[in-house]
Image (cartoon, rainbow, N blue to C red; front, side, top):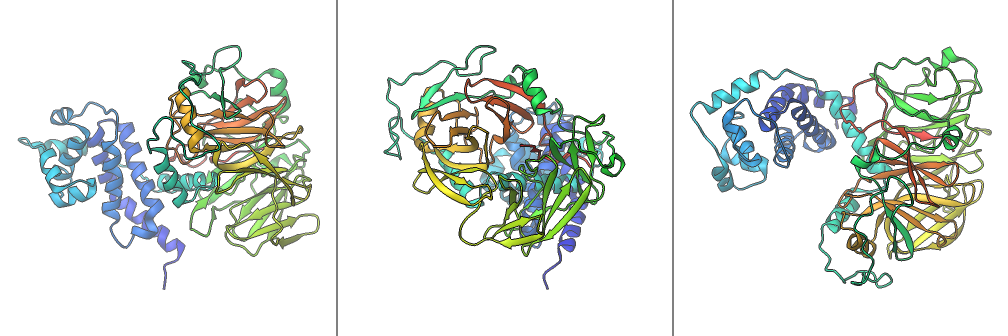
Length: 559
């Protein structure tokens, strides 16, 4: 009989707690920096959590050490060691030395963990009088930490990002491989989009200026600009007062374990509109947090519901909140759960459950008329209508929770699918050939301009990086509903090879400004007319070891 999920979870917790101190001590010897050592150890256990069901009965010890030591060998820097003999070694030499003289592994075991030959282990080995004793003494001072919940939450976060951006394992591998293939200048895999000629304009810098219009270039007739890197985000101006008042979002759209907030039961009936929804981690699961800035205390905790992670048919789990969870009335909020959809009336605090014959719901949102929820799993699609209490499986007609949806076909052609008020797809429009894949939801503003995230196709990637060699690979795409007029791209620097996405569209603000989750923790507004970028809010960060009480990664903004 196959073990139950609780048995698997218990086995994982038992394994981690039995190994975590040794792994943390080894990490400290590998890098010499306490904070970095914690990151290395946590990352190794997150990797193990993602593969636990497959390696638990095989070689979990080897797997967790493979993750630890191979990450350590990729470090760019490390701290000063308590063991002077380690200061003079390369990262690979340190890894071999710690495995042989602290972990007491054989040369063959060290070679397997590091993914190198036995001969390479012998060549990289470093010995010295009393080295094993020095290593033990340095490691002995490292205190114990519990990584079980950090590993679980980190694994959930990674799976969420995989699901959020719609990239399966096979597609991810293909995209990573494609990202590192060297394409000769002037060659192309797409005849419709020829490679750039030597006479193409080549600005020396496309970084966002402190004032004035941003530098742009044409990418197959799509106006393109490069967004800010991490060091430039803080230099962006804050959003203007008019847009701030229209959005009604606080400058810090997150909270920590110490944040005290009233419960929805304590707030009572209240008609303040919901501007955003987040999740708070608790020992039992996750509880929704409503953001209503018009109240004296803008955060309120839904204390009558505790949500569990959603699990798709591939066994990947994700947070139970969609970015399209809030209805147009800013009153009703939906949450996906295994086999059911919950709908909250934020004004009364009432939660209604709609049973769905599908334990693997993985996406959904409100229809344009705000009367129904479209939810789906890998192979099935459902319409939940709160007014009638029905949950109907949809046929082959096709439905979408948004007014529009951008898709890219296998041949590279782009299509814009248009839906009616009930979410039924009624029209297909064309679009420029600049993307190979899209991720996340497509959001439409009142002027039928739409935005989504996407990867550049090969031809567009070659041209963009010939204009500015900045590892440009993905970003945000905005276009009018006809799929052609005034198309615009905002590319993320340094995003080549990243299959999890650099940025996510969360909606629209006043005056043609796309709201984007940029590099995980910053909510930016991108004016698709002028190209101007401004800072809106700080979002929950992607710390995979976040403690209980902190905000989950998913943020839903009111339309």
